[in-house]
Length: 318
Picture 1 (tube, rainbow, N blue to C red):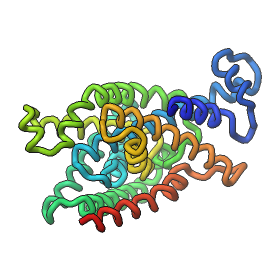
Picture 2: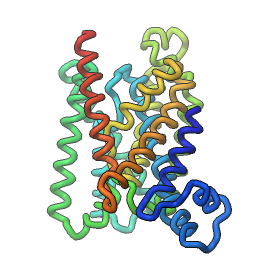
Picture 3: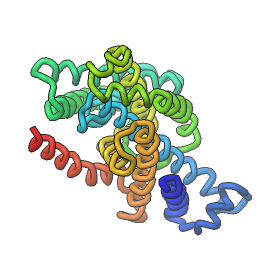
Picture 4: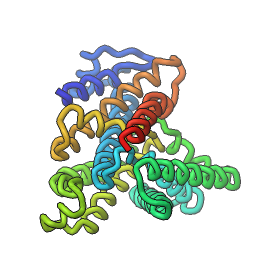
């Protein structure tokens, strides 16, 4: 069912824009392109943009599903834990100080920034005692700190930083096949690794003592799964910029549909994340047509109340 939803959302995303293109024409332009204007628009502008949305949405959804299970924290997500902000800072540093760095290595630089942010968030929380709400608040503080550092770099190195602003806009506008080629290998490999590790995610989610009793090296598995999650989020940030709250919502919606088994939650989170981002991108083009609203703003408008609801729910349960 969700595959159908994703397919329809993808076709809608390719169809809607300044020049409306019917779904049948979209289908022909994708699978039997010709020299018509509509086919050119679909092939060069809208299809790569939609595929970037699929890659980014699935990455953030799966990354959050892994983080929530590994930390047993329903508020965990790349945006909340500061991973997106760290990855964005890494990309900005690369653009300013390493302008000739190949795109593939730029993702690794984003990964280093995201991993550093996650470790900083965890260290700050561990100093005062780890709880879901404290971890989330520490992540918000770390993200704010890294955002301030990024703003400082942009001010001090305005000319050099200008080239990175497009990539860090929290938008899908103007994304091309180059962005698809940059993110796709990382996302696909990490998604396959996440699916292959889904049973380990289930075991770790049961608790440290139970997992150890079943022969799991909890520390090593957590490091492995967290590494996959951070790399996926970093790849997404490298092509679309930081998009908050999407990862937070997707796994919760997935669990509401398929239950708690991560063998189902992980692929469902990917599908839901893709669908939400595709439809939000359609809304970004419609809400202020013919202009565009950054899709990150629409996602935040939906996700922020969801975050408050979860935080209040956790607070009442405690």
